[in-house]
Length: 283
Image (tube, rainbow, N blue to C red; front, side, top):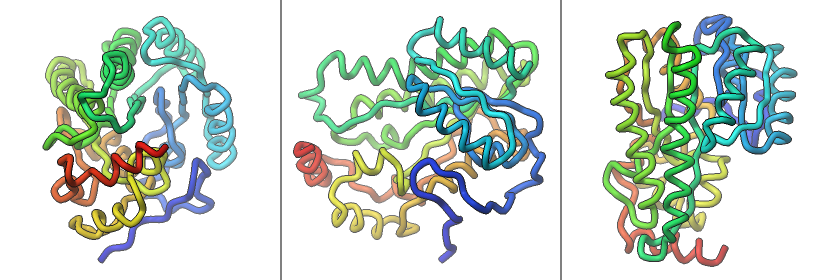
């Protein structure tokens, strides 16, 4: 079985990295609001945006130090269009252009639908779905409409079969995938490609720690999946890099699933997730 590529714990940068493509494949393209080490390594200047400015300040220093590329950290709440407009204006002032947008804002937790508050459901929809539209719409208005661009929306496989305890996140991400298709159709004539990436269970991430359940149960599910292992952050970055790069120049309106086949075999019913629900209730 093929071994996964190198990865690191947390948000540190890889000390050594073998380029997947030509090192200047994406030069000199900045992208907003999410960035990662791998885009810097392939020639991007980057913008990272979050509600937590200290967090992105730290990340920007690490990225610039590891890659020598410029990285602009910004404070932004994707739910607030005025804040998005201000952030995009600042990025354009700094770099003069934005060519790639990675929408990855998300909120999630485990909760039965019958116990989910109206506000909790709305909050997840506001972050995941409205946030994706807000940033895409603002960037379209301010740059993409006249210059073209690439949008990659980070999605999920939750809506493919339906899943217990995830009606909020599954509904939000299914809407994001629908949005991907609609925008691909409408904005394609302006040379804007729009795709989704749906990751599976990824080691070393907050999502897996919070939503994966007890280790023994998770190991059983992973072993039963087609590739019989968790993915890692490097593999997801490679998938995003592909969708954003010229190698995917004829790909738009697609949802790329990068989960080792996990969505085909992972339990999705109340009975199969009872251990996760019990574990979550103790948090």
